[in-house]
Image (cartoon, rainbow, N blue to C red):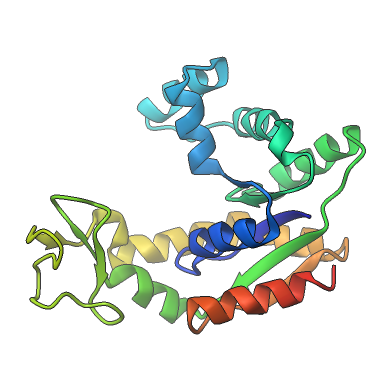
Length: 216
């Protein structure tokens, strides 16, 4: 299957993308991973992306599209892929359509993870990360540490990242609503969108997603 995963920040896209890709036996292609891999390998696109990032500017669509194209042409993506974080806007969605058409393939589904805005803010703003090891993540409501402000694993100090503050989260949601959300209508016009609730236990959301995708 060839799938695009969309949803607001905090809807659990990263978690579900990893699980769905494993279940469906297709590669999970995320924008963040593409940037890191290309920058690490010092590809021409990676060098270009790094120059924009270091200057504090957004990476242009054509650079992101070029990275996605290279990744989708890898042997492990011949049988399908799951795109996470790309396309990010209608312009990128149109470019992806053109790219797939030249390859004689098309998307099977666009999976839209839906979550109430207040819940999204609560999920992200409640995160606390360990200063010693950022892989140790807690949540003040859903997975609180045994001792407030202290990592259960290594005893490091837990803190709230700047981009997890409520004001920043709401700004990220504004960007999502104005730039990314319109691609849902774009793909809905093509009959590709399946919308599911991102609420509830992770396993339930994954099951819901697989059931929705089975009809595509």
